[in-house]
Amino acid sequence: MEKKDLLDLDFDFLVDNQQAKPQPNTSEPEEDKDDDGKRRVTVKFEGQDHVVSWYEGTASSDVMEAILCACDCILESGFELVDSDGKTVDFHKSNAIKSGEVYHLYKGEEMKEFRSILGDKWRKVKITVNPLRHAEAQRAIEIMQIGSNLLKYTGKGIPHIRQFQLSGDMQRVFWYSGSKPQSETCIDMMLVENVAVGGQASPLVKKSLPMFSNISFGVVYKHKGKERTVNITCKDELEFDLWVCGIKALSYYFKGLSISKLELLSHSRRFNECIEKKQIGESTKIFFSPLPKEDSKKTLENYVIKRLRSKEELYENNMRIEGRLANLRDEVDEATDSLNVEPESKMEGYKILSAQESEADDSLQLRNRMNELLDSCAKENEQVKHDLAAVVEEPGKDLEHENELKRIDAKLWKIEIDIENVLDMIKRIKKQSDVTWKERFKNWFPKIF
Image (cartoon, rainbow, N blue to C red; front, top):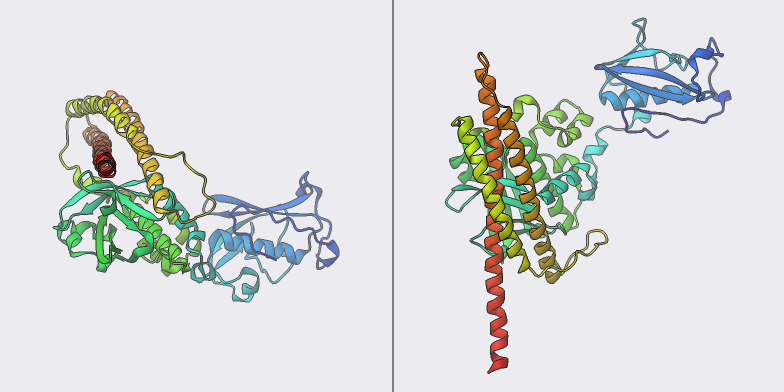
């Protein structure tokens, strides 16, 4: 019988009742059977109810296996099941489970004698598979293609925020810089040699922002035959976990290599802590859940925003941003008109694009990203206006008032960063357009003369 990896399980076994072992009371009370002809029990764990059901006539041995698998999926460690009388269920007895009962699940010793039913928990983290089959990699790629504001370090160790994004074909990670061409701000995933984290992090990161070395990483890659390193600091631990996971997975994928979950997520502190506690199920949930409250305070923005600005100062900034966004929309429309963007083509699977296709794909992504950022900034800035209007000073609530102003200030800071990102993208398009006209003139000149 195959174990189903779900929390709320519905085991529908159509097995001849003659296979069931004799039970003291073979005819269960009519009230224990629901209208759909199923029997049910409820397993309670940490305040949540998990229902396991089976059809009337299912063999008792299969029912016991269903309960075992359900408990293993809920807790994913050694466990014991206790009935309403406080007695531990003996899974060796086929008549130990009673339909309609409520059972309580607790941590306990691992039942090695049932390993043939439950399987090897470690297999799903140790087995090597196609990198893009890992759910964590898929989640990371989704976030990377949306784009993130990451702190990048210059060659002299000076940090500045840049918008990083994964290309549509997933072959390249690039960042937007108004002073450099795209060929100089791009990492080919096939040419990534290493992702350095933790103790391997660059001395530049340790020197500039040592308190954030745990959420910093360096991507070592080949560029025009030479080795380069891009050093990055993320805003928090979740962003760090996802970006390192995504770059690792894509690097392995484009090299045709397989990777285990244990290796793919080895950079994550929270994943490693779950593995040490043998919490296999919990170890993979962290990539799909927000940071715990104690970790959510250790962010880059909390470090950057130190001075408390007044409500009046924040309102002035809010109005100034509104004016900038109105002007910027016209600049974006003018800049995107110069982009030579072909209609978006549908890709079958993950095919390798030609250089020309990649350039068109990147241009389309650039145009879309600028409009997305402007729409997002306008929406967030409007929300800030409403938030500021709702801020009222009340006696005895100074701390609450200050925290709300800091939260609004952080929002405005993020909006300003995205405005700078859009300006960098416009500068890049204008430079690209100038280069294109120079190339065209070179081609036309011999024909004219």
